[in-house]
Length: 155
Image 1 (tube, rainbow, N blue to C red):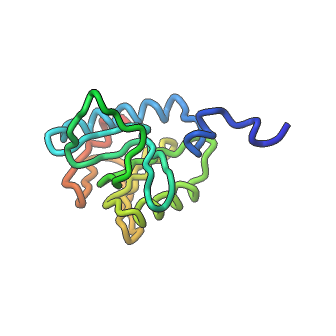
Image 2: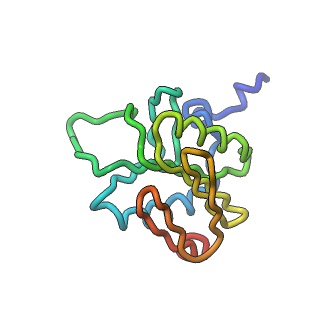
């Protein structure tokens, strides 16, 4: 059996491993925390971005507040989000997500969060690929003015 036959439809379509229970819990909690900023931002999950660096599907994308058109939906977004969040899955390599961050920033993303569930940590990356690691307390993203209490995510 070829390697491609072993990959699920989800993995083939999105180009990333299938998420786990912990991944899903963290994703839901982060979306909930980000929705505190829904006056300024639109929070989208698992939406494929058709960027100049190629198609990518972050776990969470944050855009400036978007208009909703219930009649004319969009399957892929061409404009880069302000923020992308990638959550490390059990069968994924950290280096793969760091490479994705570089692609996001090359396409115009302003901030990237890399979540490592096992370490209960979130690293905020800048477009210059500098990072700050947070493991407890309040995490502040200076590019967007967003603050998240990590105790609510990992507590």
